[in-house]
Amino acid sequence: MNNIKFVSLISGSSGNASLISDGRTNLLIDCGGSGKCIQNALMEAGVAVGEIDAVLLTHEHSDHVKGVGVLSRRYGFPIYATEKTHSSIVKVGEINPDLKINVTPDNEFEIGSIRVLPFSIPHDAADPVGYSFSVNNNKYTIATDMGYISNSILDRLKGSKAIILESNHDVEMLRCGPYPFYLQQRILGQYGHLSNETASIAALALAESGTEHIMLGHLSEHNNLPEIAMLETNQRLTAAGINVGSDITLQVAQRHKITIMDI
Image (cartoon, rainbow, N blue to C red; front, side):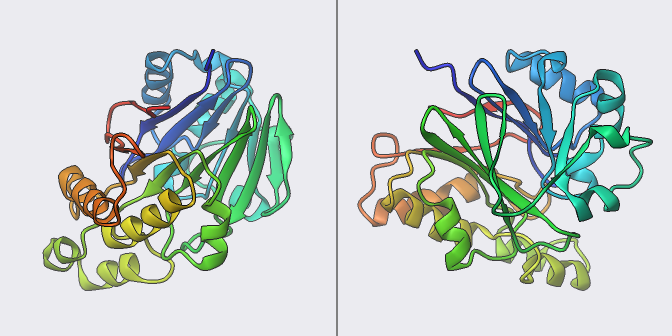
């Protein structure tokens, strides 16, 4: 019986949080919504917030951490992040220092029955990471908030049975949209966010290496549309002879609702 839950709780430029669970260990990845928002999303996913064993933070930006302070004070779960991420978090109130656990990129560790591997990603944060999880001999990965995907990062992503992959913006929508030039340049830069095109290229490489399930996430509210992100990756996969729906599943994470991975 498959008890694996791999769920996007909220996703996008305004807030991000995900859940991975094997029925014994429940891990919350990022906590970028209000305490009530995260609590309700978890409940909808079938996990009470009091059943969370740990929170793992990718980086310190508000859309990934805004609810972690209130929930950690209320429920006392440990918070895993790189040392620089811990020291860079602001505006979440006091967090018990005993609850802060440092992680180091490329150093594996275990939380309950789940093995965790953090890996460095290029983003304009103190020391950001993505995470891969080994659950029942399968690999599940969260890879968002990246300016580009190098060969070494792609190697980290390959082997994933399922992945939440950033597909943040459509380049033309961004260039013609409401963002000022400096912010456009930040998003397009090497420490910004992945475009739909870059995500589609990565998705093809992953599909060809055996990935079975892809969820496109962290879509910009102003510079993307779910239909555009889905179309870009779907077309690239289809053009390469990969049948979306049978060879691989492809989804887009909803902004304000949970999205359950088809695994």
